[in-house]
Length: 398
Image (cartoon, rainbow, N blue to C red; front, side, top):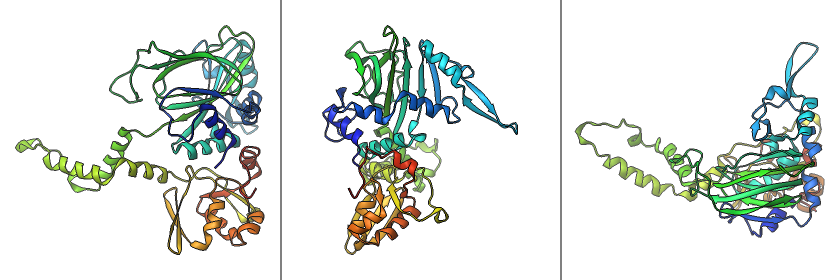
């Protein structure tokens, strides 16, 4: 999937592909800063918060580095039947933002089609699971104190300005669950300065950082953070532990008697490691994800006229003789080789209008599309979902 923002981020950081993800600090700027407003504006974020029933920790508000109690800006909306639904109290939130505060929305890719599509594009590019968090800071407000994240982040400044300080890691590749609490900040300042609209920054896991608008006066800052949790050697060992359950030797009790030294267990573990190397784990990780959230297709609503691939990762298309396998989301679908042009089009990650596609690859593309939709690899391109692609991802038959 070729997404304008992902391509622009790659160019801004001077990367070619995702190989440098997590390798070192990088910073740059989008060539076209108007792209930032197409992704999200502060008003669209507030509209998103207003129209949904959100709660902590999905939506949080901070002032002077401390979290504001949710009761300050949440209230129950009571229906005529007495049903109570927690909603953001926009009047109270308005007061907080006027004073100066930071509003955080986690997993924005769940609530907004533009966020959903760019998150999926980033996952296809990075080949790792991605989450988008949004941070809106107003007026003379502080952000978080100096801290580090247990995942790599790519930050895009969407509006306004914010001052940052990024330091090196005090422990190499620290983890959330680790042998060391990693609580002493590094003294090495890698970069400090102001992120302005269209600026992009990559902060590797473990690098200490903080951001603030303290001293900036009236104004605002909105940035999006791609949280990218790459797999580690620990992840691979955990995966191996799951596979070990298949073998009887690992299911037996560990006995203390008779001076057992675990020799047979160690030999079995070595064989297991050889049989399932890290490359197998990485490949399996992509394929074991379940189907993405999507609007189902019901023919009672009308014919299937447009579709798009919604898998978390790029489907694998494998030719063997007269057959073609599509491996994705824990499934293997087999087609005849004649369906190959249809599959390349439908699984491109780009929106596909079936009438246009039929003129290029033939009328049978509609039947292939129906199969992929039934198998939850593709989904109907609803007007709402289509809005997430407009101006960012070209139609597959363009």
